[in-house]
Length: 113
Image (cartoon, one colour):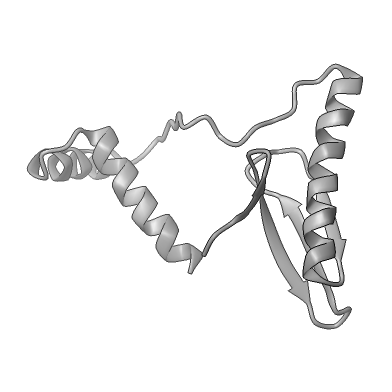
């Protein structure tokens, strides 16, 4: 599955069959920015407009627009899980960061299907 993105912002899109409308929101940021349309081409245009409006509104109020996550992740996990993860990484010849990124990417991809 390929995410719809614009200017580095991904979108989460759903369809409401009762109202026959697509609706979405910018994903990966804490600000809530939504958009909707009743066909795909209008949905894409509405998404682009929502991103552009978000960036412009932030500029007007002197706020830095949120961007997708930086790639730095801090986890607090059970020490036993931590130990097993370090061992698994070492046995696969990888750093814990490399191993964790691969495992997280694989599971995230599986969940997205």
